[in-house]
Image (tube, rainbow over all chains, first blue to last red; front, side, top):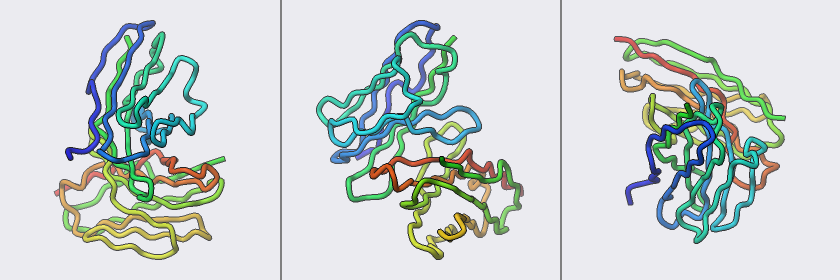
Length: 113
Length: 112
């Protein structure tokens, strides 16, 4: 197992475009999290899945954001009509139900021009 | 509400010991985590405290006092590779799940 992977690693887009990021968690981890991190700040929680169920969403997740985890394995995060304020590092993490440690992926750095 | 405070920056010398403090105010408490994050990389787990006291792991130790809402990360025998940001994160009890609330991080610079 090579850990949590995220694709793409970098994404540059124009304002108003839609973007989609993918996260592949560690195998058999049933909990998956999305965070957003801007320069000089700690990660901010966006949403959380247990298996395929999305159990919690932050108020940071506006209507333009949607996340899915259709088969309880990989997850996608889509941002519609991107804005310059969406520019950030989007981090995915996973954990096993009984474990406490969240393992983070390398992140997708989004730049909205 | 939730509030986590840690110093923005610290400097130390190679071979020395440094203590990074974290104070928190959260809606319930279900554990405190320390992560290390090198520039441009993902956070990596360092330590976890849920009960009061000191947890030691090699050159790294973490302390927790729940009554004071206080934790620190102690790094011994500093090495140049320890230059990174150190993130304090709390798991609030009210969520019932494992969401983490992070501080802004402490940027540590280790000099020769």
